[in-house]
Amino acid sequence: MHKTPLWQRWALGLLAAALLWSCGWLRRAPSTPPPLPTPTNLPSAQEALQEAATQLQTTGQVTLRLHESQATAWVQQALVRQQTNEVQDVAVYFRNGQIAIYATVSSQLGPLPVELVVTPQVTADGGLSVRVDKATLGGVAMPQSLLRDYLGQLELALNRWSQAYRIETITIADGWLIAQARRR
Image (cartoon, rainbow, N blue to C red; front, side):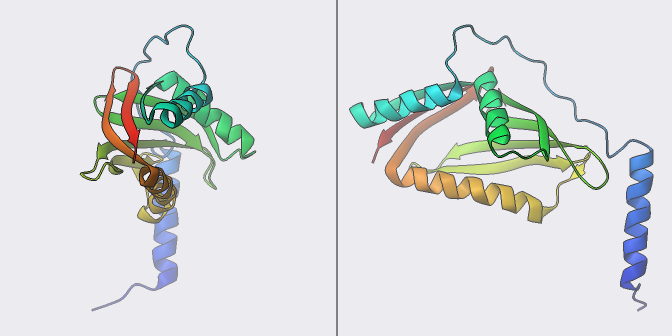
């Protein structure tokens, strides 16, 4: 069997990337869902989360209602605080049991669209797991190493949270994420 030298594989990969870039494939943005009307008088996501934390400490249980517009604003503010320009144009959608996140990331090839669709599920012990339904970068499947980095951080945060709280239910539909939880 003949093995192709590493430099030839790299050259072929760069050529394929250049062809995909030139025809617009890597720049093609995924189609996002149509926006839903944002309810009036919504608190910020930070205020809603703070209110939920206070309710948990006071009563030992909580029902958190978070609208996709609140989540989008919260993620955008978090990116500004990190002072990073790598991720831009973030939009979060809560539809049909899934959380969809659309963004644009900076890369050596220029800005690339990202689409990440996950389904959160309550585990038997009241924790939360996240199943990845779709992850694309520039219109092609996101590399598993990159995906593991981001989801690993999310899973650590969820695990810390679920040690103190038990999630009873989570519902995602029509622009809303509604979670019921109680203190362990």
